[in-house]
Image 1 (cartoon, rainbow, N blue to C red):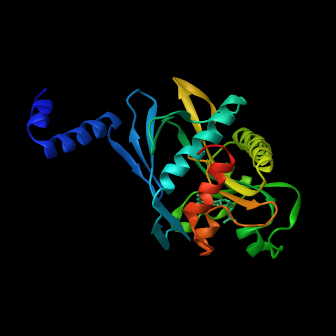
Image 2 (image 1 turned 90 degrees about the horizontal axis):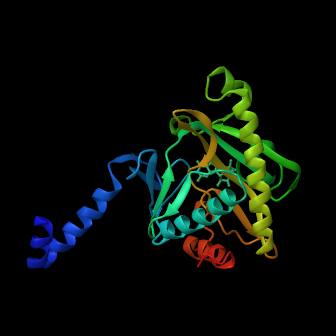
Length: 262
Ligand code: 5GP
């Protein structure tokens, strides 16, 4: 009430109070990541995920602000997560709130990044000397331990079980989920002339009083996938930034346009 009265009298104050009220609706900041910030949500068990314009690579040694990237990734992640939810592959996504924010379910993140590869590229090519672009005989699933200080090292299921990061049952389910995500996104991408070379997802545990199961968390966007134009091989993902191949925003906009998201 007081805020509204002040706002009517003083234009500038009105703007800052409006901002304050909007921020208050988000709740307390609980995590500030490289490309996203998480705030407490309005309902119990929810969070608000804010997509920033920050682009980072090589464990944040390379950093830039790409104006509009957060808006594009918010929309693209909404698109993929909605599609997965519709197919019965549960994700943390509840609804998009605005250009940069989405309401998500709070999860207990399993500290493993799951990477699925259809073609050799990136760290697989570096590690195993397999030429980039080689079609793999079958999709290959890898686990990486989420730890920036260690540069997210690749780990085996044995490590994950021995160090209590996940149980064997959870690992089996994580592999099954990741392969379904691979089928789904590969198909959609192929339909718009793009090859899904590889991608990374994160998975979390959900609880409703008791442990309920696993759902997909974080984001699915060109920040976390390798996407190559089928005809030209043009890179339409974060490698454009990592390797200075052109304009990152144009690449992500192209993906969004082809998917009918823009
Ligand atoms: P690579 O292991 O070849 O560097 O990455 C494999 C795939 O996982 C690529 O699509 C890459 O974008 C994604 N990926 C791996 N680690 C990360 C990470 O820490 N953050 C993001 N956004 N994507 C990752």
